[in-house]
Length: 339
Image 1: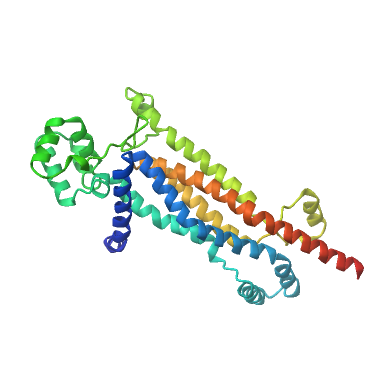
Image 2 (image 1 turned 90 degrees about the vertical axis):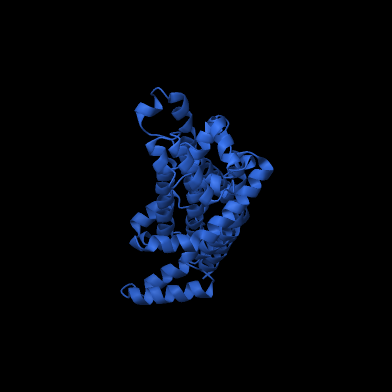
């Protein structure tokens, strides 16, 4: 994978920026779980303008459906002409087909530093240098304070170091005396009795085994997150459509083939958004069972904020647009009836 180091080098400024923000938040709040919640809310607030812009573009696109259907009617056998005229129509009305996917794409970009930071909280949030982390890892390995598995994990995660130092006062004292670490750089990963440094398990032998008191509570976050994500997707789907298709219209579409091709919104943009949503869900489930439980807190708050954003956009943009569009359609029908 020759491109991976290059990509990581490009992303380093974002990793360091996120780490700096989280480090200062932890110094202020002194609660790892609360820091993640506040940080996730902050990220979502930053993305709100992009979400609003995306939704406004989608509303405009749906409002142009009559014109799009007219283009299809005039050029039924010329797809190239249809695409050209639709592109001109979208350009004239400020509609961007790619705009609907921009918020999801930005969330995907933001996930990369979140992955890294949650695996290395001692470095990014505690502020311990990678050189000192390597020295601490070597000390713990030489003194048989970590097992073979934990020693291998230290190459990509410093959570085992935190676990050992928090449970071994002697090792902590030695590391501090050697100058590898300061006491105020330790991160407490506990949040309401859940160790956010541990990874949830889907294996029944672990969830219901001897360590069920540890692994069973870890499933709370994935379950809450999946429920919140499903609610968010359903709500977004219902509140993002300008026109609600009723049963009578469906029956008319069956009787009139010309209507069957008409839909309240363009399927291409909706298809892209659906694809991004399902891709995000797949990433969400995979990360929650392969990364520390801190990811579960991040995803859950992210979904709750998504629900709040969907409601905000609906009441302040979609609903007024629906009313305006309905009034325009009534005026148009009255003019047609007079003629």
